[in-house]
Image 1 (cartoon, rainbow, N blue to C red):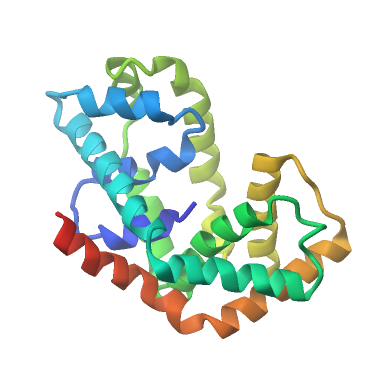
Image 2 (image 1 turned 90 degrees about the vertical axis):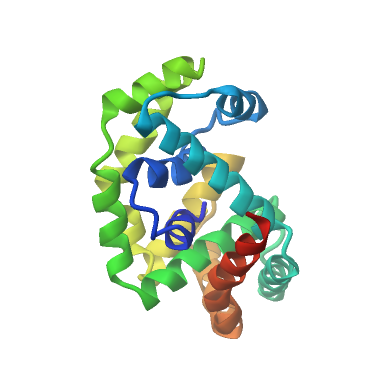
Length: 226
């Protein structure tokens, strides 16, 4: 769920298709182990398709490093502690998942506050990507059955541009709880929503420095891994 973090880490790569590949797994509900194997065994001749595969591979490597960081575990624990202090754990089933995606999204929010231009560049880059080229990529990897749902998600993602609203507290809370609802099927009332926002803001205040440092920590580790 950390779209801008992936983009920020590899913003120097000139290929829009590479950057598209960076976010593709998080927009594809069907991106499971089988699709990973199909992408890994696909040896494209078309330059755009090669770039997409490279972007997907980089996404997977970055996630592997990021999710194994003790700093990431600490941030998740700190957020769960904040939710517990406001007696929200019972009201938010699968709070471990909420904490997981909240930390990812909060890092994107922090990046947007530091680099307001980042979101504009991000969406302008995605607009370069050709729909027929992406559709052909899905077909050639043997995943064409997933393309319809994926493109619907991608179209909504690029048209609504909801990432640009992350700096607004209410919009960020709405985006987080919306993602949590789509994954868990659980809704919350207005009181829980407001308390969740309170917890998020306190967590952000207490962990501001670490949230800001996380992308650079990953960048340094990637240099030794590649």
